[in-house]
Image 1 (cartoon, rainbow, N blue to C red):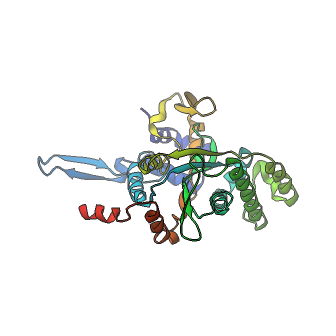
Image 2: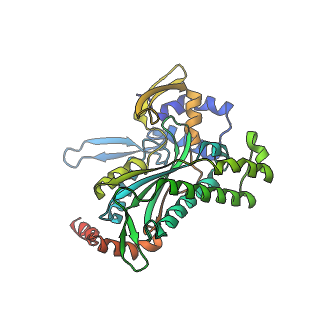
Image 3: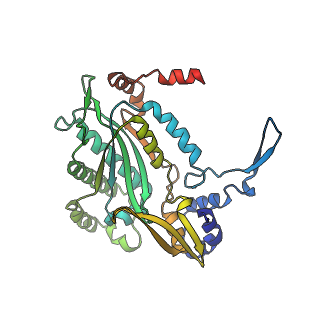
Length: 348
């Protein structure tokens, strides 16, 4: 079966002749093409019993590589197990409407940071409101920029515990069937992100090129944003997970995922790439899509993140400032054994 590496190796040079790519995209292409080949060297493992030697080529370890995420994912998940609470967890997804995609693509680092800030502010503000929860909660946010068909679709997955710590240090549980009203989350998120986007514009942090160059003028930019305030933004909240173990398994599906995994690529033939994708708008049916190798590479490179951008972030009770003291208090309040890690380490 062909892999992303095969597509880049076969058609990458041709693609670069006709498409401008950034330094970061070039770096990712090079890493993925060289991954687990003799170019990166090799290492040997020898069986102590029979003396059998096995040579393995080194991995590129790039976070966009579909072959290099498994070990990183398992290590990360193992560390997160000790931050879980004995409560239900919700999966909240916040999505940016497609009318803003071009602006985000041209200002990725700025806009992804704004997206995280808007999501964190929305959940923190609504959780603290006594009308909904009246407590400080914590969550893990994971940035994804793609849809199943590899098109640009920036959104953040949030794994949120069903409750939080109030000002008196008591644990407050959320309602069992939902964390916060979806419409309230959507409108608060919309207002926060657009306010932050305006602020970035006034500070001169945004740049505009090509078809949206006219937006560099204040009146044009404000006219552009006005109808977006009236549009309902897509926010989705899944029912709570049953156990902490389910949360860990679910996290593994999202944390270190890349735009497309190799097992979804079915064929590379006649300068075309065929892959399977799930159509969420059509009852989650699996479908087959064939596009040119050129278009496949273009879509894949769209999801290369800016250098240094953190795609997984922790907030509230899970933030670095609160994890040591407040999270321990939460574990005691919800009957989680905080000595679990210590005993686990002792056994090792």
